[in-house]
Length: 306
Image (cartoon, rainbow, N blue to C red; front, side, top):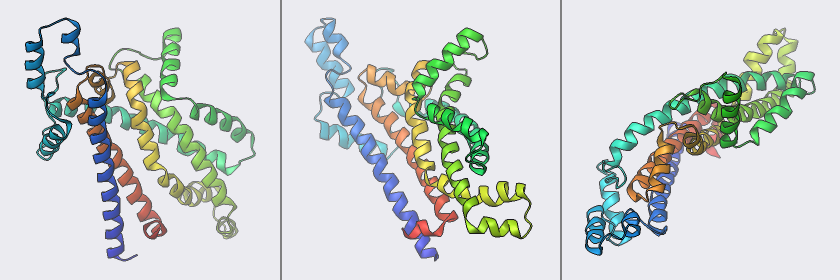
């Protein structure tokens, strides 16, 4: 693949990432505006006089047509100005900047745990698909894979309350990280297991064994390296699932991340805060998808021309 082909591949992926960010952030702002009520609903319910409500709506920019509000917001985004939160009375960029670091911390820990658990298990189960170990691991992986992260978080919290093995203190990352990591680990194990079994069944593996390649090296170097390509193909989906699941998990476990902030913005009918959180989340997901696509493109040149 020439450098021009690689550049075209990168440009296509960047364009797709930018489109994702634009659609998600603009859609979030529109949905909040279309939802009934706004940041002054509590004032209306408290029977505050209409003049005060009108001044509050004007101060928060809620009295403008949506297209005008959208245009001003997009102009601000170009200067890293995401507006002001009506719920917190602070710039959205500052709030998002603080919380996105906590979400990235939680996601990174969950991803490390998922890879450390799922990758070796997938290699082992793929090396002997019909063995006793694979027969035990496969149903467990499928069961965990079908369990939403929020259900896993509740289960882990019940386990922590009943046994004291885990801490459920607000801000402790163990329970939320495990709730996010276990379904990802199951996904990785299933993908890696299938890919490893296919690589070992291919003629190349038999030829390598006939040349005297030690079994451990055939499995953990030759097969594992070849089998990682399909895993790179779903890397973006895995990371997207990680961030989408973090919204519910952060709310349940009181983790002070971007998902919790988004929930506060939705409850407070705060359009700029919701749009800012959606924008930041979309950027994280798009960056992860882009990194996965580039890694897969470098590992497998056929992807760049598909």
